[in-house]
Image (cartoon, rainbow, N blue to C red; front, side, top):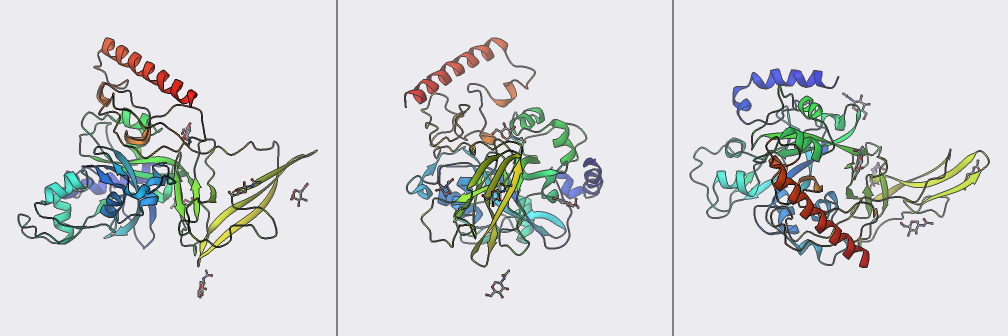
Length: 410
Ligand SMILES: *[C@@H]1O[C@H](CO)[C@@H](O)[C@H](O)[C@H]1NC(C)=O
Ligand SMILES: *[C@@H]1O[C@H](CO)[C@@H](O)[C@H](O)[C@H]1NC(C)=O
Ligand SMILES: *[C@@H]1O[C@H](CO)[C@@H](O)[C@H](O)[C@H]1NC(C)=O
Ligand SMILES: *[C@@H]1O[C@H](CO)[C@@H](O)[C@H](O)[C@H]1NC(C)=O
Ligand SMILES: *[C@@H]1O[C@H](CO)[C@@H](O)[C@H](O)[C@H]1NC(C)=O
């Protein structure tokens, strides 16, 4: 069903020969509305959290929470993230020249920069040299003076923040060498069909450098339109910071209801207590009765004029809810696991979900990558050498058992 309007996009795109060259999803739009979206970014060098944030004029804390990285680590903004690390960068996706794009990013050129190096290296292929040239009306790309302030147009999509009528936040993903659509789909808990529909693809084939819009299941907010964080949407398994760093919201893993609590950052905040009650934001009390469970909760309702709106609600539910399960939080990464298999991995502390063992988010999506072979040789590939696969897997499992044992001892 959702494929139909997107099929129309394909026709539109193919009628624009210039745009058809760089394969990226084009979403026509009108009006001035915008949405929250994510950019899949791979670090070109070791960079501080604050340096990554500066590249996108993004909030460092928001980048960390979007990647479920612990923000309570002292001086976390100066933590150095490793080259090759994959991060999801939150961005505002607006409507510009009738097309969805993120236009809030500026880059101040440095000596030796070229449009090609800015595009492919510094912004990891999220933009092309031609797009920078066009956005800045550069007539001679061979002359780039240091200190120029360039607009960097970045790809994003909103699609009404839904996918198949369910809340979704869209990740702009640059296809890497050896990526396949089935592998990307598996990594992001979606399907090949869905990726094809969203991107109006005729066949599930991609080339490195293509940019795909990947729908991530998410928790949507229902804040009033006048709230400054109207439209807040948080991807499953991650966090968002809002209300001037006073409120932290999370999504998943148990359900896709947005769950907000006071943030642990040392900032001064307006009251986060629900009116006419002693409950604080995120508190839930339950009382078993003969008719079921009487559940009262104090929820976050948006940030309006510096005030944190709270919503007190009571409902009768069949069963009393258990304690809230949070998405796993990881320590700030120091290594990229799939690149250096034997490097010590930071221990996944602060985990409040406790279930599965997860490696830090060094691989796109933060899911568990089998070390020792590239995505194309992984389970989705057709040419993988079975014996090396099995030995890698065995090696991998023994490392995981070891990690589990260490974790257990701690
Ligand atoms: C967008 O999504 C909302 C629900 O989130 C729905 O009510 C609305 O009809 C959708 N609009 C379009 C154009 O699909
Ligand atoms: C949300 O993520 C968890 C793992 O973090 C997964 O088990 C669950 O199926 C995901 N939910 C959806 C709707 O994708
Ligand atoms: C209520 O929420 C506050 C802030 O998150 C927390 O410190 C407190 O333990 C919670 N109280 C109850 C009863 O859940
Ligand atoms: C449910 O709990 C709330 C607050 O504790 C109380 O005001 C309300 O009367 C209770 N409702 C029922 C049906 O017990
Ligand atoms: C916010 O404050 C301004 C001035 O104090 C007021 O005019 C405006 O109506 C307020 N907005 C809302 C949504 O309360």
